Image (tube, rainbow, N blue to C red; front, side):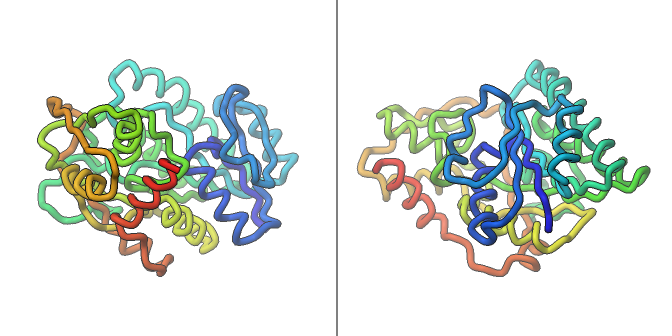
Length: 308
């Protein structure tokens, strides 16, 4: 049986995946590592082991791996968002990138498989030919967030070449749905619903024509759960819908669904914002065959659950 250690597993994505894994197999052995101050309320109904510590506590992680006979480590830690700046990047290098490099060495030496959650948007950069990004496409990030992901991915592949690390890189698009923080600075749909709830205008960077790939959180969790059970290794896999929607499209759907008027406040486009990111999900669909939630239905579910 696989024994999983989720580092950063109490967040929106990690907790959703853990819930799905336990739904499929209640006897699944899962341990979650979270800092002492971290909110773990999303895991309150989950039968998981909890270890309080941080990514840079290598000794604690190694002790946990030994004591709990961990076979796979799932890395979900990041302190940045696509809009993060230079000084956030410097902090990320110290608090996430360097400890991750040490973690890679630990995993390879103990023959532990590493599953790393990268970025399905920021790591690729600008789309110049209009087609969806394939996993093998060149990485040209234009944000510090994407650059940090690229550095970690490069170190993962290096550790694989040199020391035989078994890995899986997952590149999710833009997940949304119940459980997502509606008062954060990241996630268009969640932020827009939060602004509606607070009766505030929704900030749109640029003219609203930028295109992204969105996936409902239950679909992402199901797809990842299936991929983890498939035992694929040593590759990157996009996790998304494969469909591109503009900011205007998303807010149009929300306007049709919401009982409150959608008010927009335009702001200058940021240098870190790419114009279009849509993922080629051919590889994901080879492993996960179920239909995905249509965007309008997903937004409605999220909105209605949030509004009670």
